[in-house]
Length: 479
Ligand SMILES: Cc1cc2nc3c(=O)[nH]c(=O)nc-3n(C[C@H](O)[C@H](O)[C@H](O)COP(=O)(O)OP(=O)(O)OC[C@H]3O[C@@H](n4cnc5c(N)ncnc54)[C@H](O)[C@@H]3O)c2cc1C
Ligand SMILES: NC(=O)c1ccc[n+]([C@@H]2O[C@H](COP(=O)([O-])OP(=O)(O)OC[C@H]3O[C@@H](n4cnc5c(N)ncnc54)[C@H](O)[C@@H]3O)[C@@H](O)[C@H]2O)c1
Image 1 (cartoon, rainbow, N blue to C red):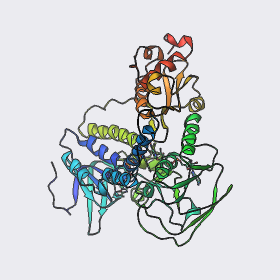
Image 2 (cartoon, protein in one colour):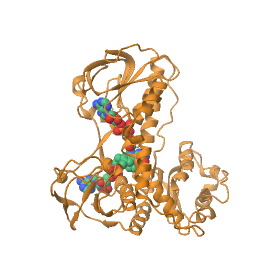
Image 3 (cartoon, rainbow, N blue to C red):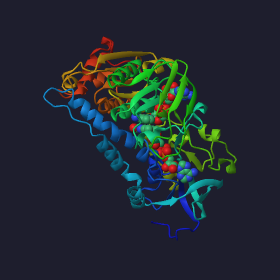
Image 4 (cartoon, rainbow, N blue to C red):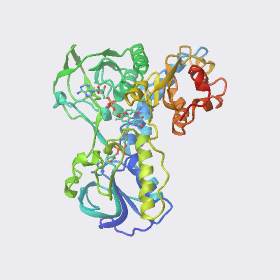
């Protein structure tokens, strides 16, 4: 590695130390040193690439894509429905997680000039980290910055203690498909996992403590996804808070295997007996056993960004929106800032408050960026909205026989700029970036009317949406 000559176990001094080698830590290290003589170390306790590569985004999307293709083939005239191959789906997943081998990621890091150190890292003093692995300890000192990029972990409510229930890692790493599966939660993990596990043949019951799925999105998103789940035989129980959970012979059988005997789940609206329970009740920043007390801090200081100038947190660990692309964006910005400061260069350009996009890979897909109408109201922004059926244009009608879903834009009445957009429908994820660009670039809707979508593509939904706005929005607004 440029700038570092060492034997494997020596203490080190480098410019930047990143604790946690998920996608976010990798980006932070890369941007902190690129094109310079600065040096960086990533300390990783498990697999370089983190949750996203092995236990979250990649395996889940690898499992979901065959279902999407099969569903489309069954709903387009002129094509015989494709047959799902459950074993092939698991093999596809195994290929996408590189069989839980991170050597290609290590090769990438080394090629980017980042040194990878294996082991568990803890802060032991200002700018100083101790790394312990099975064999030894070493100390790494940072001249400029230490970055905490330790990710997050699944929250498991107390009712499930001792029952060895599944978390999302088991669901993405599924080896034994439970015949009867209960999923607790109505959020993103619950809805995506219900889709692929039902697709793999599990009889899925979703236990949702509220009365909607995917709250926080436009309400039509949850409604469409509920219809999709029902069509795939998923049983959804609303207002179902779990009050107790007992399991016959709980066992640690391994990732993705059934963890013991029958599970008896009691809820406020009835009880269910199942072969496995997946708890999908959110995630929490992984800030334990990180030595933050050694530098006079608490986990709350990290979440409040109340940190000394040499210490930074980014990605899921920081309490920011827990999405890979968002964490990576923040990491690029942070890395570039650290690099500029270390080289005494001007601060890099940043955009104030860019919008957060998210695609939920359910059937149909949910793609949302910026504010929903409700969130805009909560922030006191006066908005007008336009909403059209997803099948309102030739391009979407061509996708499938039956095209569910809606598209909606949320526009600031004063500036005439978009503040949010939601697309729910087949391949909706690919519609989102145009909205992200429009919001980030603050392009007023009267200008957007001159961005011409091609015929016959789903993008023509933009024409219908912009035509549905009030007449006065065809001219410049006030700023
Ligand atoms: C089932 C599921 C599906 C998801 N799908 C998507 C998706 O489609 N799109 C999307 O944008 N987001 C998705 N997410 C969210 C996404 O996985 C996270 O936002 C992302 O992984 C966060 O990246 P990170 O680098 O901050 O943390 P992580 O990926 O968790 O990486 C942190 C790394 O730090 C290491 N580490 C922790 N503590 C230490 C220590 N003390 N010493 C050394 N190493 C340490 C860990 O081993 C880990 O490798 C999904 C999440 C789940 C649960
Ligand atoms: N495609 C994607 O972008 C994608 C996919 C998966 C996960 N993620 C991210 O990972 C994070 C974690 O996902 P998640 O679905 O676990 O969290 P979430 O916050 O999206 O949903 C949690 C769900 O669990 C429910 N819940 C919380 N506590 C509960 C309790 N004690 N009992 C019963 N229900 C309870 C909530 O009401 C909610 O329905 C999310 O922020 C998500 O954005 C993203």
